[in-house]
Length: 571
Image (cartoon, rainbow, N blue to C red; front, side, top):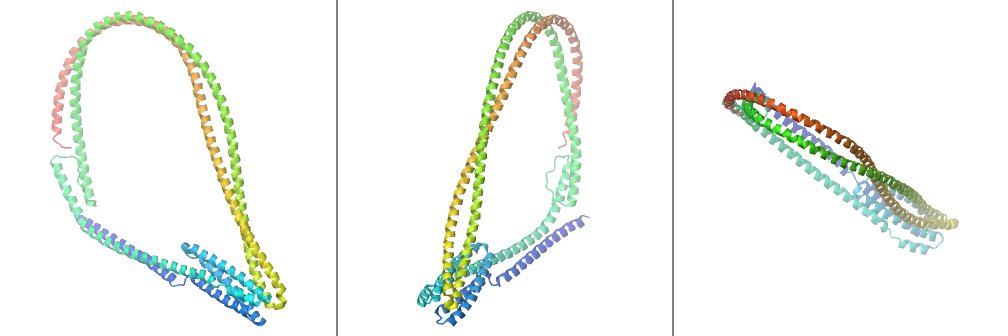
């Protein structure tokens, strides 16, 4: 049965370790395989930001080339064809700008802010480009070809290309960093898998070597315990038993046997010691009682003498009680005065508490006004934010108006002489859009200043609110102090009344004590008579105690012998 159980333990341990190793290995392989497939699918695709930025760069160059042909074209037919191409290029340019913004929104958060900054720089350069191109169109529409060419040569398209080039480089850098992080993660995963395999092998070897050693140590320890019990040593076992089913059962049986025998021997030793101690105590007690009986006779004569002296002391006590009565009457007078003063103090305390309550109400009103001020200032901040949103909308409308003016200028140029008046109107609209954008910028600056001042007002009002709250708390604490003082003074008044009443009762009690002392004198004389009878009884009791002392000595001898026999066992 033992061999079967040990083999079962060994087989179960090895099976558990192998199963755990297989589960961990398969889980790691499955997870890393899926991760590697996902990473390959991600890194083999082109970055959306790079693709959209390159497309936008091509659209900018195409728009610039078509614009150049439009400005330089010598005839109206070529200008009309260039204007049609330019309309298409402008639509493609806007579509590419929207695609870049969408790609940035889904890009890495670490680089999204820098990408948005590059996009804002590109948008600003594009607006400047379109403004200068619009001026050139106006000159072309009015027949001022040289002025248009001069403006066109001053336009630098590289200011549009530079932000796009920066965006492309930044997106490529982000992709390279992500690839490096992925490779580092895969390296750590492979290292963890290798360490797990090594640990599993070491655990298997440890189980195979330690299990037999634990079983053999268990039986050696049990044999040593059995030998100790055979020699009469039933003290607690302190060996370390390796855990198995057989060793646990054997250990439990040995422990129960040791505990049963130890309990029996403890009871025997305790009973023997208790019997010996009781017999010795009985002998000592009987000796003391005999001695006390002998002393009782001597004490009886002394008590008789004390009774005579007590009669004399009784007279002195009566005189002292008379003096005590006079002192109690004086205490009664003083406590009455104290009660009156306590009543006056209670009234003054109530007046102070009313003043504190009035101050607390005023502070509460100040606190409420501070809270209203904070609420109104926060409302002003919210309305300023709403105005800021409206200003942003106006700025967007101005940009769209500028774009429409540019398109109108293109159409006027394509119309030739018939569109010259329309071109002048488009230029005025564009100037109006520029003025609107400048005005909205000033309004936005003023709104920021208003919001900053409102924030300072909110902070100041909140500080006032906290100060009022602290003052309210202090007033509450002062009110609590007045309340405590009022209770204490009221209690003092009640105590003074009680002391006054008690003083009157003590006067009555003193008179009663005086009468009781007279009765004590009579009883003392009776006690002297009874003491004489007690002395005779004590002599008879002394003889009986001598016989009990002899019996207790013999009992103590037998108890000592039983204790010596039980100490041969070690418990």
